[in-house]
Image (cartoon, rainbow, N blue to C red; front, side, top):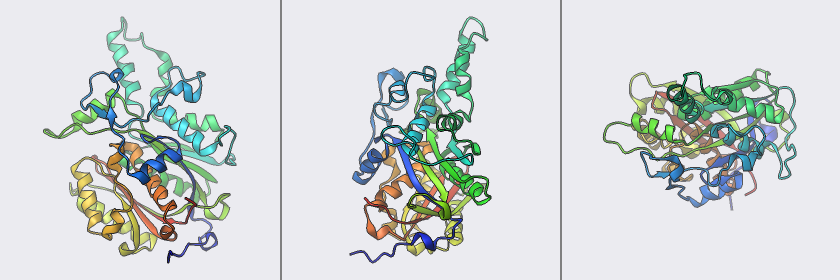
Length: 375
């Protein structure tokens, strides 16, 4: 029998941002159910890379299985679509549409979109530049790919697909992008500039991305095992939420490691987030680091291990199972917390701490109050 006390929705201040829905397209498959099943099972996702990618620095990848853009989104407007945009659109369908493809969420002119990325579709950009160098003339390029090369294309395409006319933003923040996007949405909801937000982050796998990450690795380190996917959340103020909230966003804190001390920066960021949320470190039910394959990622884990109870770090399987999903990582971390919490009544009313670090020095931490959901 659980001794946990669920937090009534009425007990939340009406302007508290709450997550009322989520969707994921991940190496576990397409949709929330596939992600939940994979996380709860602690399943690995690494597979041998398809020969179509060509030579890669690592023989294994963590990609979305069976992801065919035209099969999932239709042929209209998808012939030149980049994988990042397609991942985001499929995830947005899972969030905003029902099984019959009909709208499942009421939206208005102030429903916004904010998407966290690293640098957009690196494969699309490099292919376009390659054409300029290798084709007969520098200007003999595929002009149809130009729109897909813009950083904000995936967020804009999502808004167009679902008729969302509110603030539309793209945040380039690497592994911290998911939390930066959530913080952006939280702030605009609090300012009354949006009534609801589709917020999350996405990353695509490509040969260009694999070689970029391998080149950025320190000498002697193996090429990272890369993943991909998109995680999206529906964020609303508690007082006007149309559906039962799954979690309340109590605080989000950000830092930049300017002293080359990722342990101290991650520790300070997490402590400040807990303080602003009014949560003691000893009361954290689950803590989920980004598992970034870097010195910063290892320091992040050590900082959390020194801060929260040991069992908090064990409740949610490591994000290493999904590979290094870069910008999508923080959104997958939140989705993993919600997946595990939904099956554990003891989580209700408890706090979760999610952190992220990027090799460029960005650090972020979020504290969520888990409000309960049927498994």
